[in-house]
Amino acid sequence: MTETREVVAGVDTHTDTIHAAVITTTGRHLDDREFPTTPAGYRAAVAFLTGHGGLILAGVEGTSSYGAGITRALTAAGVEVCEVIRPDRSDRRRRGKSDPLDAYTAARIALAGRDVATPKAADTLALRALLSTRRSAVKARTAAINQIKALLVSAPDAIREKYRRATTSVLITTLARCRPAAVGDSVAATVLTTAKALAHRVEFLENQSTTLTEQIDRLVTDLNPALRAAHGVGPDTAAQLIVTAGTNPHRLNSEAAFAALCGTAPVPASSGKTNRHRLSRGGDRAGNNALHRVALVRMSSHRPTRDYVARQTAQGRSKLEILRLLKRAIAREVFKLLTQAIAIPDYRDLRPARQAKNITVTAAAHHFGIWPTAISRIERGLQRDDDFADTYRHWLAAA
Image (cartoon, rainbow, N blue to C red):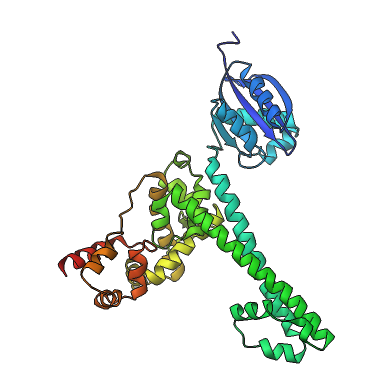
């Protein structure tokens, strides 16, 4: 009977419309229909899909783009949703392409359970929007700075010589406050007017980037404080890793799957007597870049990582091979931080304990052989080093 049978849905998504199809659990086609991408259209689509029996699963194309609205509507109705990739090109050549065909194909893929994934949570979409906006602001700021420097190359001699040796920050500040009207030469005044407008643009984009970074930092800290606290993981890096993973931990089946997703799973590169692996060129390149930045930071400022690099270099490994090993190890650490609730040690007791003993930051830094800024940042929770914090805490107790 219709009331007891179980059905599976597939949804082909576009900007203005979605096409929904329903099949039985044996693969038999039942019905398909087109709906507008409006709240009323989504409600009608959910009613249509659930009206053919017990809807156990819905396969949706582009759950983070064109399919975001129907995904939210189906999830709110208690329907399990999986993301399906677009049909294989060879399959399209054999069967042809249309919205009903794509919708039925999505349903069959969801039923088979191949090439499907769990949709990313809504927090991921918000974080991705902030991240992409910040990166576009940084990119536009760099373009404006390059445009200023290119403009000054061909500027009149008086202007070019005045700003020739100025650093970028000084150059932007000075140009933003210059007075082109005070220059007698019309050509020089026009060049200064253009440069001043570009300098104002740079300052605006820099302020926008700073504001967005602060918002990203707050959101990332709320979503995953342990990841944000890891050594070498800044707001931008943490945000990208969360976006790659998708906020919801059950998207990641295993640590090896996350490594492959980020392109850090080792790829065999052996031939003859040579037995080695190389970096993967696949996976999410933005996630791979985030792990790469963490590796570079740790290679320069993390003592255990620097010792590891020294050992691997002594064994004859190249820098690229060491980076591959480091990124794979960092992926393992990040997977744990993304999928488990890890408590963060509190550093708020360090500064009061030091002040109670009348020990200056400089004296403590001199004892441990590090910069005073590092201890100050650790005491304020801006930098994390749990091993050093424990050692520092015991030293303060015994002082």
